Length: 214
Ligand SMILES: C[S@@+](CC[C@H](N)C(=O)[O-])C[C@H]1O[C@@H](n2cnc3c(N)ncnc32)[C@H](O)[C@@H]1O
Image 1 (cartoon, helix red, strand yellow):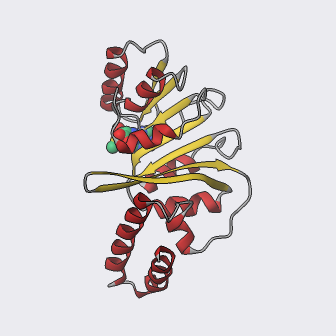
Image 2 (cartoon, protein in one colour; image 1 turned 90 degrees about the horizontal axis):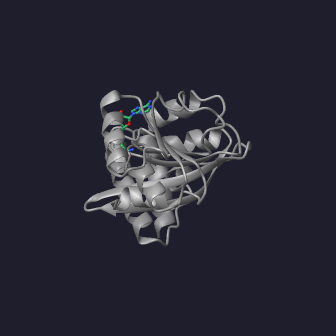
C-alpha cells in the first residue's frame, strides 16, 4: 500500500504500537498501511455508511489483513469501546462533522487518547473547539497533492482550556518557517480576504496572520 502525501502525513503521526481507529475510513487505506508497515499490530476501520465500509472490507481482504483490522459500521466513535483503541484518526471529513463526532463521545476527554485530524474545511473552527475543550495540539504539519493543500494535526486532551486569539486558531502549532505551512496559511489568508469583502470584522485577523508570515 502506497499512500499519497495527505494520508502519508497522517500515518506518520501515528505512534508505533498504538491501536488506531480510523473514523470515516472509506477505502481503509490508512489502517491497511499502518498494519502492513508494522507500525500497528491491530486497527479498526470505521464508517457510518455501508458502501464505503464494504470498500474498506474488500481492501483489507485483498491485503489478507482480516485478522488484524476489524471493520465497524459506526457513527463516529459510537461503535468503538473506550478500551479498544487509543488513537482516533479522522481524515477527509469537514470540521463540523469532526467536531460533532468528538463532542458526541463522552470518553474522548482523557489524556490516554491521541487524535490525528485532517479536516477538509474550516480547520480553524476545529482548533478553536479543541482549545476550548481542553485539548492541546502537539504536532501540526501541512502538505500538498498537486494544487491542493492539506493540514494535519495531532492533539491530546490535557484538561486545561488554552487562552487563544483568532489568529492562534489559524496557526495552531504550524512551523511558520516550513514551506508547506507557509503555502497553506497563505491560501487560508486569501480565502479570509475573500470573505472579508462581506465581513470587515475579519480584517484584524488577516493583518495579524500576514504579520506572522513576515
Ligand atoms: C471523503 S471520505 C474520507 C476517507 C478517508 N478517511 C480519507 O481521508 O481518504 C469521508 C468518509 O467519512 C464517512 N463519514 C462521514 N460522517 C461520518 C461519521 N459521523 N462517522 C463515521 N464516518 C463518517 C463517510 O461515509 C465517508 O466514507
